[in-house]
Length: 441
Image 1 (cartoon, one colour):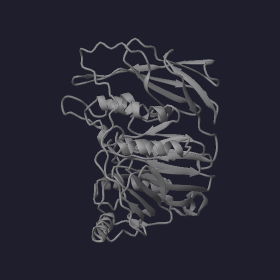
Image 2 (cartoon, one colour):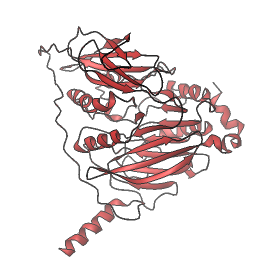
Image 3 (cartoon, helix red, strand yellow):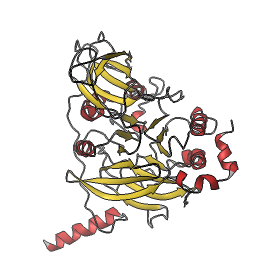
Image 4 (cartoon, helix red, strand yellow):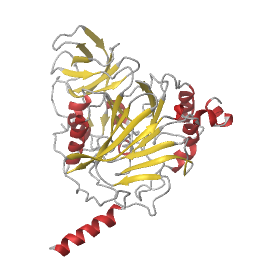
């Protein structure tokens, strides 16, 4: 018995290769959840007008976008809302879309923008004039503000545990750096994912960007991201973008850029031009914090997906450095890693901190193997399911913590304080030539 315990400990240490001072035995993957995705064949005759898969997102200053799906194609696309339960003083009219994917036909997908809304206020709302009442809370106008962060969610038992922990962290906004449903062409899994996340996503804004599992491209038959773009509409138009795959938004002193790892990103691309224009407009007096999210990490010492972000990094890292981006968050690798401030592959006090949180609970399991020795830029790494919490305390200091899912308990395994670059000399010390990149056509 003692020999068996010793062998288990040795195996755990060899698999982990983390920077933690003591070994942590990671949990095994869990089965997919069965939520009744509602697969619809073309001959189905459902006429349910009840709203389902309700979720909200930020849609410009003081506005929210409410999105939901109905099986009844005649259901209206309006939202009634107000500050008291059951009392709706205001109403907003929206629009709708739908899509077909091989033998699958989506329900009617509604998108309605409500507002202007007051900051840090609870609103009650109802979709399409019927169904249950939902409740949301708007983010604050100023610091402090807390973000929950986890990518690569999927629909497993570990996903459910992660969402439970996210719900406990009292966040204002949820950030998801790609890989939502893991539908992977099976469209009814988009429906089951919408049902899974509705309790959280209907009460706090979810700001997402695409991952590889959202692409669902069928050459000559279906363009990529049809399902994702139809269901999860983000404020790309409000931020001057021409694509739902990349956009930006501002909330309580933070400018957040959501980039597309699977949209063209070289210096001749529309995304590159948009990013330069967006960064050039950032007012660090108004938003002293600058955060960027995308799916494929640029700094990754895990053997999984090694080097996949190199081309995007080569094209765009200098832009982020010129703009003094504070924090870069990615997913894709099913593990957690945090870097020192880094630029061009080396620790740099004026670079961004890079964090990988592709550990939400996906069905593919964890990425256990790391490169050794640990790179100088890498500060902490561990292959476990979990989520992150980011609190901008004020204009100069933020607190990050990462919480592993330990037998369904949220256990803080890594944390650190970060000082904004605008409060340092970095912005002034950077060369005029580098900063001028943001202004050149």
